[in-house]
Image (cartoon, rainbow, N blue to C red):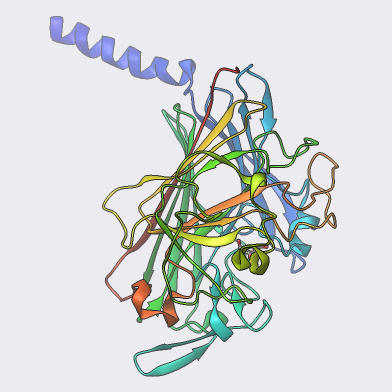
Length: 381
Ligand code: GLA
């Protein structure tokens, strides 16, 4: 009898669950169509703690992310367009997944197993973010959606052999998950059927004051736990050297207001980047587990962003090419320095720089980059 009672009790509890509802949930809605008529979907993840993240299948991109400040006021803290039209015309990679190889490949050219491969040159003399039709420009499939203690969506894309000049058929997935600790993560995984090169990252632009706020992001305080960075030439290709940050405007080992040094033309590297657009070396090699790679704090709202990943490098870009040409979700122009981008990845141009390590992926191996964006707010002083 007691077993029966127990079984009935368990059954009742299980039946009651959907009625209680999960804290973290998702919603799906159409987000328009591409020029070819392909449907784009938006999946909004919410965690019942005031954080919502809208992911669109075009570019597996973060289209919006709302989070409370220290007074509990919510704002959308990522740059993006209100509708599909902006994304179709975009050169800015707002919130996008970038690959196969994030950042620049010198002349778009690299060698693998004795053969030279040419990817489209789309940034001066170099290739940027995977080519003219990189992962940011394609529509991803929705493979799975989940609600529960965390809400998630898994998107998939099959990059055919020869896509953008890269060898091998690459199967890529991106799983965005939002948990009750206000962490939005994106887990990138890839496998190939032939040796190839892979270095995938996320290109979300952050303004912790809100994407429509009159204040840009240059007042944010940034911490990067890196002893060195990889200096670049005038076309932003790494020279191959590792330069210590100590005594330079690249030292962010202690929290530092970005705007204090972003105009410091006495450093040629700042001139080349028109501000910060460089790779910081958090470690020479990937770590076993994700660890803190960047911390950003907005003193005005108290919002804090922490970025974690196991990747060795993090590209910090201070929104130097935003020039007031595009209008964002709040109907405001985006101007230089209105946001910052933090992209955990292998060092730029690694396919041509053996001393940087390797971005080679073999059949049977699994590529992975798990990026965690941890949101919080500190009490105001
Ligand atoms: C990356 C690059 C920048 C710029 C942006 C997109 O962060 O390093 O130079 O191209 O993407 O505008």
